[in-house]
Image (tube, rainbow, N blue to C red; front, side):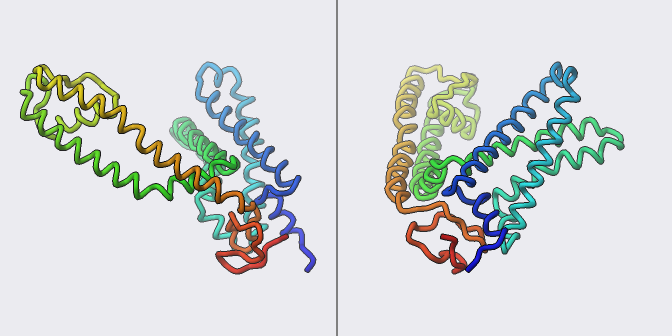
Length: 272
């Protein structure tokens, strides 16, 4: 079956197996980085005062380019609402509309303050970077696969901090800052995570001994989630060898097997 222009556009925008798709992704990466740098530099008052016109014109150019990309993504997919209400679709929208909204707010009172606030929303464009970094998919899958183990681990840490906080409340007095059990639990969490604000500190010998144990435990506890996620990343790396970047033109689902002919989500025939 002969492919129409929408299929070709979909291949370039949503996939990275072709030369055109890779070039599009690289160009989009640089555009995202440029837009984020503009937001950062524009927040510096001295630079904004001196180069305000340059920042404004450049931001309009970047915004228009992102708007074109957003429209093209909607046009080339048969079920556009799947993209519009997807995570990256919402990010694309939120990072594009502030410039247009600020244009209409300039005629109202307090427009300058609203404009400065809306400009900050464009920083969300940086979230799109993860989509174009191949290893981010492995990390996302590894985090999802290990979420149950991590939640159980965090629940155990909460229980341990509750016990340690209660013990410290019994050992120390109010002059040391342990005025309540919740306050003592807060101290246990801060100490175990090796943050150590120093606003609460044990004064008794026994309290300092327990605090030393909590600090040592903190170093070992921090390494556990890292080990859980690392093992899942290794497992996902082995699986990813059989995955290709072909995206469904009907529902935009990705991560299909290399020998897949039809979409696993909607059953649409995939582009070769």
